[in-house]
Amino acid sequence: MRKFILTTAVVGMALALMTAKTPGRSTDAAIARNLNTFNSIVKELQNNYVDSIAPDRSFGVAIDAFLSTIDPYTVYYPVEEQNELQTMTTGEYGGIGAYLLDRDSSTYIMEPMQGSPAARAGIRAGDRILRVDSIDVSRKLSADVTKVLRGRPNTMVSIKLQRPYTADSIIDVTFARELLQQPSVPFYTVVGNTGYIRLTSFINKSPEEVKEALESFKSDARVKNIVLDLRGNGGGLVESAVDILSFFVPKGTEVVRTRGREASSQRIYKTMRSPIFPDIPLAVLIDGSSASASEILAGAVQDLDRGVLIGSRSYGKGLVQTTRPLPYQGVLKFTVAKYYIPSGRLIQALDYGKRKEDGSVSRIPDSLTNVYKTRHGRTVRDGGGLQPDSVIDWGKVNRLVYNVVRDNWSFDYATKYAATHPSIPAASEFVVTDSIYDDFKKSIDPKRFKYDRVMEEAMKQLREIATEEGYMGDDTEAAFDSLSKLLIHDLNKDLDTHRSEIEEYLGSEIVGRYYYEAGKIAYMLRDDKAFKAARDILDSGKYKQILSEKPE
Image (cartoon, rainbow, N blue to C red; front, top):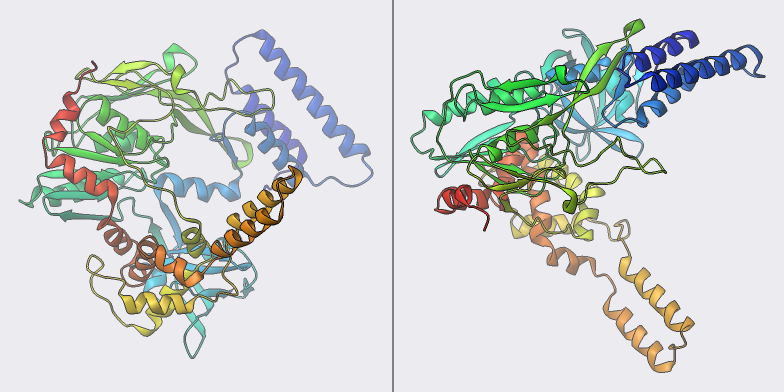
């Protein structure tokens, strides 16, 4: 929580306002006038309000509300929340190395990181955290539990856990915290003649992690193509994106330029290394969660005609943030520029400077976007994110499948399965057999399974409309009754109907119990639509055809 006194908060807010370069005297005057008004309100309430004021909460709300009128990427971090900011940029933190899950007003281990102190201590996915040292956390959620689990490296931590599906369900472990770094490349492999790299973030060590994967491909005679997977990658450091692209393009290639309010603030980023693979066919996988630095890298690949983009339209974040220290050790992260990729386009999807009267911001319509050209003359557009060269239809997630995952049925079964099976085949070879799937179905309690009763609600509404409109006679009533019987949910049948979709999540959860995050990726890769499409394009004439296409 925010720990500063009333006057400190006013000073901090004033500095945040005044450090922004204002366009003219009218804006300066408006800021000064409003600051004086705000300061007067605070003083009056502080001196005369009937009850005492809670400054931390009040000013926390005020600062957050003020920043929310700018953009979602401008954030104030008080000193006690700066570990979060450091983890975002470096991936480093002192802790036990486990992902947490909020569930039933408690915190569970979702998955320990491979090789982490938690994994070495025997902590497993599915364990419920009861106590950390002397603190009872049995009814606390992960935001609070994380604060007591993290700490200085080499300090000891004692954790009491409740483990399901075991005879002795209470487990006590004591071990030392370590300085941990979340890997930005959790998995890379070679499939056939294609090298595959999963990149989940852009932190300061990302280029070296990608380089390690590329060097292994360079020494592998099988590798003729490379797929870089940026799906779900929300971005990070611009410099890391530029550095990673340098492995694929000539040294000195312009990747991106940023422009702030003043012309003098323009900065041009060029590659600084000699490439490892200057010519190898390259595909980049993107989706709606690929943003910021991911879009810089993928957008440059597209604009330079260095490779093909496969997947679905990216998020559309073309803004650059920096951090500035504030008094009393606070830090302000705020937007200072927009970035433009090699063709000159800005891919920002939302214009936060043009809000509606209600304060909302709408996406830029495709009809208002502008046309740009890639290096080979292909047509690309600005605004609204990156449009892939080959679009993948991910399909819609069925409601039943969604509920299986949301309500942790697949998670719980994987925990149960791992408790009774010491080992499984390699992640890339594991199969959800008929016996496993039948056992999974039996583990679901029909009385507790939550259906989204969309059909029932639709039928109810249709009956009401038919009655209001005067169509509800005996024949219509009989027809509704007959149709309603056909639409009653049959859980066993529904689970069989959607087995292939459920298996993706169920198999991934089971594999993760033995092979962690890397195993999950390897398992899912076998039936990955985008990866299959990428290999097909890279191994055929489609690759050169896409990169040489010209508008008619």
